[in-house]
Length: 121
Image (cartoon, rainbow, N blue to C red; front, top):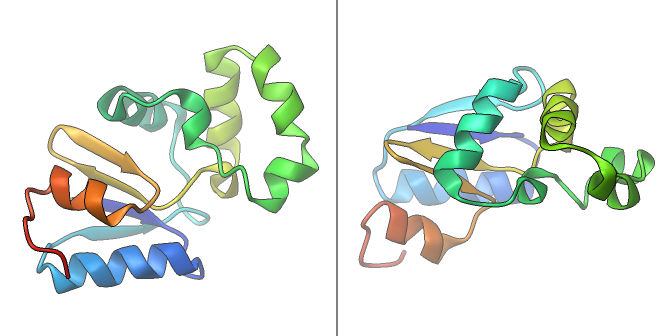
């Protein structure tokens, strides 16, 4: 399993702790040092079933600096993917990629369901 994270992010820290508490093995990848490629993002979007907009870190400084709230609706999916791939800090995190799924953002109940974990921690 692959955990795409920004180590300083409090939500990423919670997700990492949760995975460790569940005994789930994963490989961590620093989103800023090793940003997802457009092809990876395209594949994860397909696995997640989410709209591409959900892959943007809408609370991030870069998102706001670039005024993406207003610009995204006029951009094609390929333009959005290229933009996301250009800077890992534009990508919502954490992302958990497993066999047949990709989860964007950390919602414990959603992750537990995807990983077939019945008891919360």
